[in-house]
Image 1 (cartoon, helix red, strand yellow):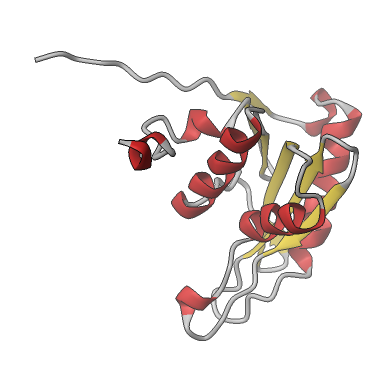
Image 2 (spheres, rainbow, N blue to C red):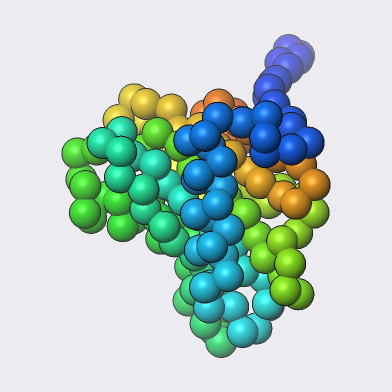
Length: 161
């Protein structure tokens, strides 16, 4: 038997004033986007702001459907829109936040498994990391790349075997 250890480094901040102006701007855009989400069933409104290498910022939010699997998360909407509008431009950073019961949630929200895999595919495609800025009301977490949240990733090498 062999034991392998997987480590993830997450930077945690208690206040957004500790962040760069660029990160604060992305959080603010994500927060505004979350308020416009279509989430009549769960009431859990997620907003994303995706910064591309060309300086463009894609704003997105979750879109629910009465048939739950038919809805889509904010992160995937942002990355798919970026791929459609700017197919040759890598993403640089993604801010994510959530709004429920007329206020932002205290703890940072993290991407679901499907979103992690989709974001990881974008990182792999461009061989470029996407910084994740996960903003709650009481704390903010920053992860340097999506691969850190998906350490045993499924990548194209499995299809090449």
